[in-house]
Length: 165
Image 1: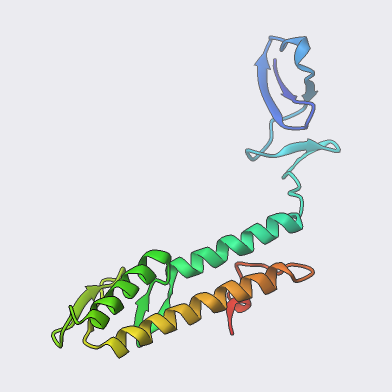
Image 2: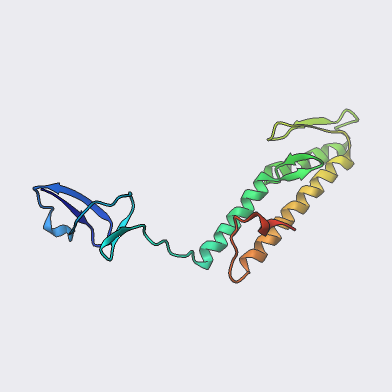
């Protein structure tokens, strides 16, 4: 005869047909296996486990992680999606120095964005405008991240409405 067992923490252990599990395992017999994987035995029935509310520290970390994700994804500048991560900022600063030093002339430079768009930079002013917009976006995200982390309670970092100016 098939018998079903749960562990002390309520999680399902397994079934045995005519055998008894090792008595040192601290198992308890239950009438049925759980209908869904991951369920636990609680008050005489299988239920989905209760997930505790995240701590303020965990929420703060989620806000920080979401801020970094948004910075890496970037923003639309002059109709083009630009990443605003460290690598992109460093490349734009290098392009700016090229114009500053006169190494890049009127022919400019064409770069391809991560989205696959070609962007032609033909002047120092154009590079500075993109760099300034990227810096402004990063600054907004980092400042908003601090505001969210200092809120009580900390709001859902995955709600886009929390990241709107």
